[in-house]
Structure formats: structure tokens, C-alpha cells
Amino acid sequence: MGEFKKHLELMREKQTATHQAFDNGQHSVVGDLAIKAVEQAIEADAARNKIPKHFGEHEERMKYVRSLSPEVYERVRKLWFIYGDLGYDGVDGERAKKAVSYMDAIIKFFGERWR
Image (cartoon, rainbow, N blue to C red):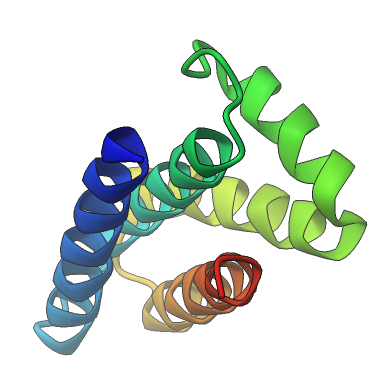
């Protein structure tokens, strides 16, 4: 359970930092942090369910999420594209707002699995 707690702590830290970056208008940072928070949630879920390895590639994480929920998979996929957009032209507050919303919904999904 140690790996689960480690990823959970990192997820929470990045989620909090994402909200702070959004509040500060740092929209390019929002995309980076939101996707990293979600990746930590996926890693935490895998650790909690005793999946024997860390995911080495984005594609492996996506396959895992798709096996859990097509709806959550779609949110992660959309967040991934927003992350790319914000990284190159991080001036779009609406996309940053969507990134925060997707991140929070995805993390909520995992939080409900962990109860």
C-alpha cells in the first residue's frame, strides 16, 4: 500500500497546485499540472489494485483507464489535448477551466473507487 499512498500524496499536491495556477492565471501551467495529477491518480489506482508495474507509456495508462470506464477515458483523452494546446499557447482561460474541470472529475472517479 506504500506505492498507493505515495501516488495519492503526489496527486493531491499537483491537484492543489493546478487550482492555484488557475487562480493565478498561469494557464499553460494548468495543463501541465492537471495531466500530471491525473497520471498520479492512475498510478495510485494501479498500485492499489496491485498491478505489478508502473506504466511506462501514455498508451498503457490510456488502455488501463479505458478498461475502467469509457467515460473517464474520454475525459482523460480530452484533457491530454487541452494539455498540449495550453502548453503551446497558454493564454486560453476557457481551456484552462476545462482542464481543471476534467482533472477534478477524473480524480473524483478514482476517489470513489478507493472508498
